[in-house]
Image 1 (cartoon, helix red, strand yellow):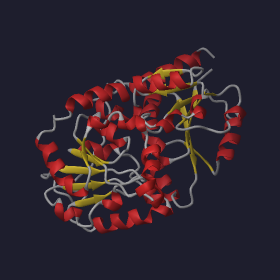
Image 2 (image 1 turned 45 degrees about the vertical axis):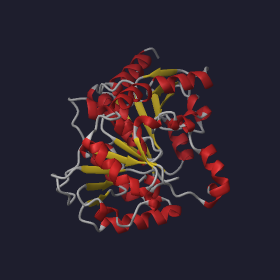
Image 3 (image 1 turned 135 degrees about the horizontal axis):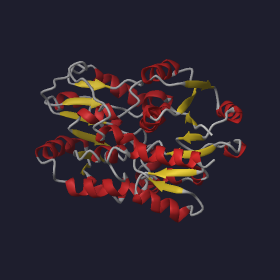
Length: 362
C-alpha cells in the first residue's frame, strides 16, 4: 500500500513538532495532508500559517468533523499531538502515532488516553521510563524531540529572527522572555522592565493562551505597556513557533515551562522566575494547593537554571549568567540527554523510518 499520512492539527502550536517530520516525508515523496481545525477568532492566523508553510490542508470545524473525515480516508497513519477521543471510531486501516506537542517533562504528557495509540514517540529516556512504568501495555519508541531538528541539522535551514527588522539593536545582548500562562510571572514583572534592562534587546514570546484566552487579559495589558519601548519586540499570535526566537537569543527568562528545557538543549543559559501571580485560592494558607498542583517532575531538574525568587533579583542573575554562561552547563547537557534525548537533528528521520517501515508491512 502507498503511504498516505494525515496530521491532526487541533491547535496551531502542534505545528513546530509536526513540520520537521513533514519535511522529511516530503523529501521521500510521501503524500501528506494536514487536518486543521477552523477557529473564528484565529482564522486569519491559521490561514497565514498554512500559506507560509505551503501545507496541503483539509479544514474541519470540530473533533467530530475530523473523525468523520478520517473514516472516509484510506490513510496509513494519523499523526496526533495530543489525545483523540474518537480513537475507537477510526477505521482499521489507519494506524495512529503520537508526537507530543510539548516536552514530556510535565505529568500531563503521561495521560492514559495519550498512550492508546499504535505507537507513541518518546523524546528521551526519562519519558520512556515513565510511560513504560505507568502504561506498560503501550508501544513506545524513543526518538528524541522533533521540534529541535532545525537547530541541530546543518542541512535544514535554521530558523531565525531579523533583530534590526524588529526595531532592535543587533549589537546588544538579546534576552528572550517566554513565560507560561498560569501560574505566570508576567503580572509580577515591572511595567518599567524595558527601561531597567535598557542594555538588552527584549524579545517577549507569550504563551499562545495568553494571547487568545479572555481570562488572561491582564497579561495582555502588561504586554501592551512593554510594546512601546524601543528595546522590546512582542511576538504576535501568528508567531506560533518559539524556535526563531530561541535561535537569536543569548539567554532565556521563563517560569516553570518546558521552554526552559528546550532552550537549555541549545546549551545557552536560563533564568527561572519563581515570582508568580497566583489566584487567591492558591495564596497564603492555601499555598499548599499550588505546591500540590506544581509538577514535581519539573522541580527534579530545577538546577538546570539560576532561580530569581523576586523580580528585583532578575537583572543581577541575567548579568551573572551572561558573564559566565558555562555555570550550569554540566546540568544543561546532562538533563538534555535525559529529557530531550538525542539532539543530532535526525529525530524526524527516525520517526519517518518507523512509519514507513511499518507501512510496508501492511
